[in-house]
Length: 310
Length: 212
Image (tube, rainbow over all chains, first blue to last red; front, top):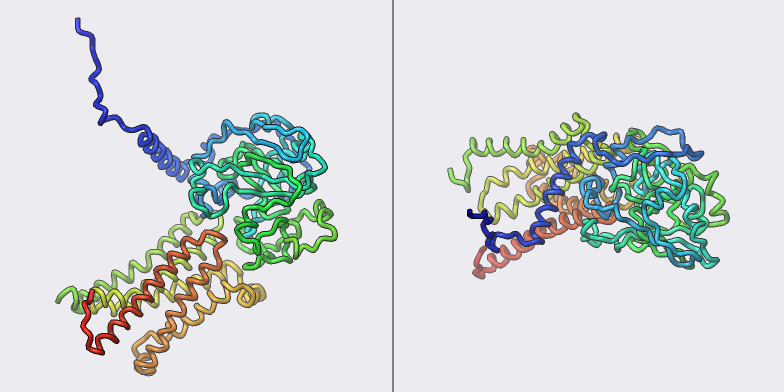
């Protein structure tokens, strides 16, 4: 009896692996983009976060709809226009993911993302988000104070500033193939700002894990500062003794300062910061000092010239 | 009738076609507004789209003369007025969007913007300079002004186009790709004019030249 032998495939017919993956990637991207365009929001099937604690930090303002929060993003790692992150962020892999905490700390440590999700009780905090481009949103974030992480690594007395470094991988973040900014994206806070209870180590929004285009799997949210201060997709947190040079400071030193506190009295050199358009509203509203968080944070800047330290 | 010289009927058809095509960006915007597909910040979207098309039509208008020169199709010149008016049309929509939708007649804020913010100062100036061009775009005004003066007045369009591109460059936050594309195209169009002028001057002197 003859046994069946599969016909040999001539080597000329075998698709090189690189091409195979490129094609597969193209199909995934095309598929992802068209799905993103037609898929109903409810079917995005993000992971729900449970055991969420209510928080004292909630503004009683109408929430910006999830569809706007997830489709109008400044995340240059996925393109410079605001609709690109929602289309391109599918290529970001958020597992496995670690955050290295190092520098001026007694207990440097590499945190796994699943560890971070369980490290402290998650709170839902409804924060205003004010972009330096004079638009704003209200977002229900999920996370806990960054201070929870900071106290676990025990900063030394030399730790005057905290630097956040975002992922640098042009394969996952196609926007990094262009040098719009000096990659990786870097941001920073003064240690007292980083310790402030409002500074949120953010792991989710609207009850679910962070969508990729919103800075998954872990980001910072500092609601009294312009949005760009809130580093996304963080892989490293460094405690340092000197004020770090952030990506936007490098890109435009005259336009973007280290502090970047929301301030209606200090205009961006090219546009006014006195008013903002809340996404979904027609008339502009007045921008509030420290984005409405003056009671909580004004003390951090007592005696400082906010025009100089913009 | 040849492709170089269209008869009136053919030219009429071309004009209708160009007219309808030029309205497409507005139609697309209107449709997107109707089905609520302008994104999270519709006012910003409308501002960007109308501004983009104002600048695009300015460049298309400036492309007419070099194209006629290269192709020898004389009738192209007969489209120039309409294209220029579409540039004004989209610029007017762009300005109205700013005035009504963006600022909602907040004259105080508008005044501050025009005085203090260079990109608005220059963009607003470009728009104001386009107004006399649009107003004098009919045959009666050409006759009244006389061809030479009319031509001098209308060379202001170069200034408007340059100002428009600078306006675009100064307003973007970081990614200058699109403004630079406009700047390169505009330089090309202006450069061609210098080149043709140089050729003409040479011809007048009687030198022989191979024309492309």
